[in-house]
Image (tube, rainbow, N blue to C red; front, side, top):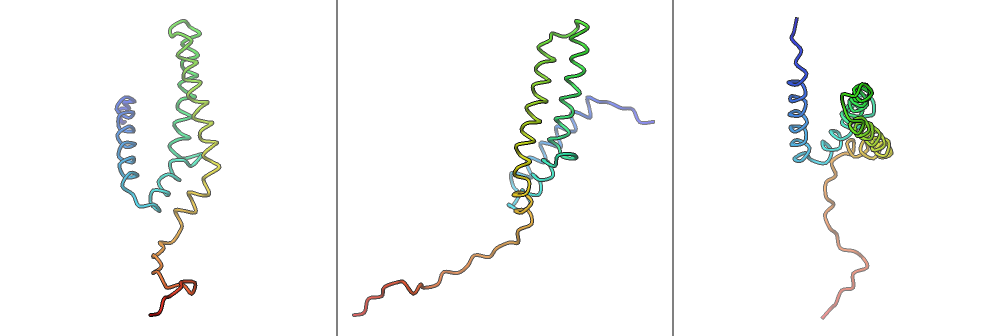
Length: 124
């Protein structure tokens, strides 16, 4: 049986998020869009999972606040964090298709400039 260490798991997740951030910062546009699309995926993405974690934390804090072990402000702050993350996720859902489209867009080679027929030429 594996020993479960939630504190070590939380540190590991934080390190993995920092690593993902480093990849995102250096990624070309298509790859960055794919990374963001996966992070923002409503059910399985990081943002949705973090929102669920805050909601669970809020329920924990509610129980502890009701028992008088934690100040009610802790419960309220965690609940507010869960609600705000949920609202942010809903706002970003409106742009999921844009990120998906960018992640699928073929690399476009720059079009070489050509002389336009509208250019007036002077003759000597």
